[in-house]
Every structure is written in structure tokens, then in C-alpha cells.
Image (cartoon, rainbow, N blue to C red; front, side):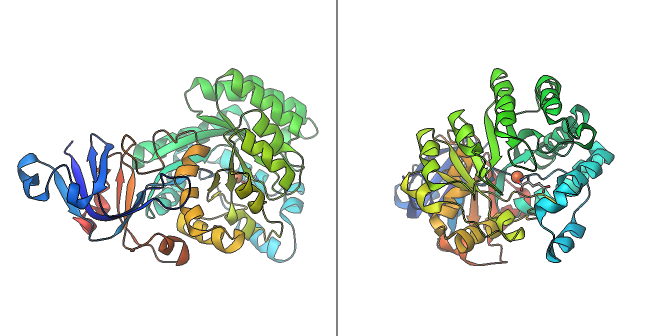
Amino acid sequence: MPQILLTNATLACIDGAAGYGLRENAALLVDAGRIAWIGSTRDCPVSAASTDASGVEVYDCGGKLVTPGLIDCHSHLVYGGDRADEFEMRLEGASYAEIAESGGGIISTVNATRAASLEQLFEQALPRARQLMSEGLTTLEIKSGYGLDSANEIKMLRAAAMIERELGLRVVKTFLGAHALPPEYAGRSDDYIELVCNEMLPAAHAEGLVDAVDVFIESIAFSVEQGERVFATAQQLGLPIKAHVEQLSDLGGAVMAANHGALSVDHIEYLQAEDVVTLANNHCVAVLLPGAFYVLREQQLPPLSALREQGVDIAIASDSNPGSSPLHSLLLTMNMACTLFRMTPAEALRGVTLNAARALGLEQQIGSLEPGKVADLVIWDVDRPAMLSYRIGINPCVAVMQAGHWRESVKQAVA
Ligand code: NIG
Ligand code: FE
């Protein structure tokens, strides 16, 4: 693998406590798939003149912005069917919870996912993943949770693994067996949680398909106590945990999850400001999902001031799914985080890079431009980072490097 040197770059390193960690007229050297050195173009360890002889590939970025590869730390990208009909129903006044309670919502996607083959799930998810990748995505978390039995949860996680192999994208696979109560367990939610703990999760884990375990704690899903049981099983298996909590009401799931050492608590619109300290004390990342907030026309804003005051790391993600967030753009997610939640463009970029890496427990490897980290990076045809959050519907991504390799489709743009 040749060394690669980027020169004349505007680097958003995302390496300090806040802000972009901006370095202008900067250079970055990639060696063996990792970032080997960062400095000013003038101080390059290999001079451009000597590069042909030394075999270093040099790319002059011409002042373009370079950021870490984008990370989507919360998605439900693998599923069967769609829920466009429910979109229409909601526009006519039905609520997300009402649709779920009448057997639609997540359960309608469960039916379509169970009916789909592994190949169909994989084929249907591919264009969604490619769309996210076209905007500089290098790491994608994908949850199960539309199978709700061992065979179908495993089928979903296998489809996620196939996407990783096919696209050369880093995929983090999260088991979300406790996403909704399957119809065959109606009225027996404790029995279903027992199945999740005793059979489904151990089976998926035994196949090497589980990187983390998630639960949905909500009145239309599972209780705090049931979530706690799933976490106990996950932790016995040595797996990190995270949770969908306080999306539609405040049940206390975020505090419970943070106290159990969860990597992240996700959604949290209904989290009380006084409970935010528990997140801070446990270094639990707050993952905000503006796509679901927007699509469900929510009014309750997440407690952003308290999160900032307590120094909680804030990530943002697409929550890409067929119901609450049919969203396939991290750039639009960033814009929504700013416009809807009043996050700053710097917070938004940190939210899809370093803080998203933290929400996946991967911050030692990815999420910032620092020597020693994996060389996942994006070159953008903009001169400063706020442009990424500010514009809507323009994709300025010109080149993506994943683990030191250019993606062929975009390499020409910068060469
Ligand atoms: O993150 N909140 C629960 N789960 C998903 C929605 C899944 C669906 O509606 O299909 C979410 O919003
Ligand atoms: Fe979700």
C-alpha cells in the first residue's frame, strides 16, 4: 500500500474539546491505512518534489475542506417493504403511537421483513447504503429489530454483514430484538423478553453478528424493567448496550441505561433537564435524531442546553427507517440538527464524526483526524465546514478514503 500525502488542505480535525479543530494550508500523510502525520504543507515530511522517487502518492487539495469520514451511529437500514401509506395516514391526523397500537407501524415492517429473503433484504438495503456513502459515509450502524424471532433477527444481521462486505463500508451490527412485541406474543411481553434473553440474543451472538445491544423503552414497546433484563443478558455476554428512550414520553429509560454504562441513549426529546447529569456522570453519549423529530412533527425538543451545560457528548444520526425517519442523508441530518434543535454547525459535524464514534465505542480508531487513527476521510468542495450544515440538497463530496483506500468512483475528482 503506497503512502498517500494530501497537501494544501483545510483540515477539520475534530480533535479538540470543541469546534472544528481547523488547520489551514495543512498536509496529512497516510501510511498503511492510518493517519501517520499531520502538519503544515510547508513542513511535509516528504516534499512534493521527491514524491515520485519515494513512491508517495500526492494529492493537492487546493484549499478544499477535509473532514473525518462521516459516521451514522443509529440506523435501521435493513428492512422489507415501506410505510408510505402510514405517511399519508399521519398527514390525515393519525399519530405514530395510534398506528402502532392498531397493528401498523413497526409490526407492519416486521411482517414485510419476515416475508423477505436474505438476498431481498440485502438488495433493498444496498441503494440506501450507497446513498449515505455518496455523502462521505465511512461507518454505518445497522440495527436488527424487524425480525422479532431468532431466524429473522439473524437474517437481518446477516444482510447487514453482507452490506459491509459488498461496499467496503465499516458496519456496526446492533441487536434490537426488544424493538416491539411480535403479534404471536400479544399480552405476554415478559415471555417475549425471556425469549430475547435466553434464545434470540445468544443465538445471534454465537454467530458473531452482534456488536452491541439496543432496546426500545416506551409505552408502545418495553418497560424500563424489561430493558434492564435485556441489558443484564448483554453484559453477561460482554456486549455494549444502548437504548431508544424518552422518544414519546418520559419513562426513565435514559437514566437506567446510563447507570448501566450504556454507550448512548438515543432520541431523548422527553428527557428531563435534571436527569442529564446522570448521562454526564456515566460518559453516556446523547444521540439526537432530528429526522424522526421532523417526520413525526414532534414539538418536544431534546434538552440541549442541559446537555451542553453538563458537557455531555452529543451525536446525531439519520435513524434511517421506513416509519419514523425515511432519511438517507447525513448532510440533511446535520442541517436539521441545526435548524430544528439549534445545534451549531460545529456541533453537527462533531455529531457525525467523533461523537458518533463514541456512541459506537470506536473513538480510539475513528471519528477525528489524528495520527494513529484509521485513515477514513472525506474531501469536500467547500472552503469551510459550516457549508456542510448550511446548504440543503447539494452534495459537495468529491473524494472518500476508507482505511487508506480511495473509493474508485470518486478518486478522479481530486487526482
Ligand atoms: O428509532 N423508536 C423506535 N424505533 C424507530 C422507529 C422504527 C419504525 O418506526 O419502524 C426509531 O424511530
Ligand atoms: Fe431508531
